[in-house]
Image (cartoon, rainbow, N blue to C red):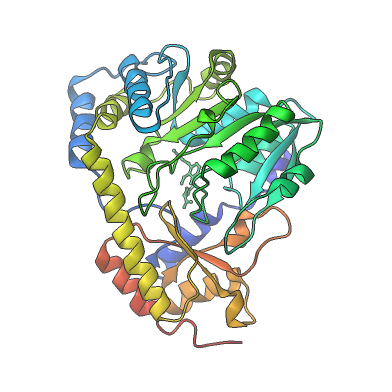
Length: 385
Ligand code: PMP
Ligand code: GLN
């Protein structure tokens, strides 16, 4: 059996959700909202199941959805994408990532990855034969600079995998960071696979800037989005990739032998949803921001050192300054068993040389859920051994 998968542990999200069930804990681990999601979008999907087309849709995705994606990104990010040749629908961002990495990496290529990294990335890079080169980001700012990139990029670098906004840290990288990364991609002739699933979940008036909009990047970027995050429907697994025709053509070859298509009824509902008014998206952001403020404020009152949460569903605490003799994983296991709150140890997002003091909480929950968690967390910092 292939050791890349045979030797892998079960994903930390699954482990913590399972522990949450066993201990009847409030689950702030795996990132998903605890409400049902927008009703009109769900109704569209239901209608499409009952009255719509339920046979194979076109391999690249329903034309109406590809047009809706192009219109959506034109409106929100100023991008001009050709729905026929530059957009493909996938079964979640996860499939988009798998297909992109399989299609773009040749065995022996160096691939630049940023740690903390989403858990799917490394096995996929390795299975494609890539040789990972890490940029290690650290709290509290999780920033990268020229020297860090210079250490990671080599003459053999073909692909860079970049997640912005960054899960788990909630960091939103802006123009300056993107320009620096774009310069390295151009200099080393690398393609950037941009995991932008959190593009709409940004706070405090921020606007997401896609790397593909940076000078010289239009021809060397794969932009990945996910309806699961845009509509707070994480189980839907409708993703999309946008790339110049010479790249998309190759990604489509991988897609045709991974899933080939994505359920047409969900695609129809996503097409409807992407055209929703600005108000929907602004309200979604405002609501998540209010949840962030409620939960982060509560954590601070309890004495947790809370890190800046600029986007995503996540807020992190850094236990380092508390001088505790307990790493993030031990803390999370104790938290779920003794205090009945599940969280994610951020060391799970490092392949090498992990940060062991940061714990991630998902705040995309109802107020009552967050308040219940805060109440349970009240005693969690008492023990210092
Ligand atoms: N990338 C990142 C950074 C994510 O956080 C997630 C899910 N939370 C995904 C990819 C997977 O997205 P999807 O569910 O659309 O496959
Ligand atoms: N992306 C989600 C998170 O970060 C988890 C998705 C999964 O369980 N694979 O919590």
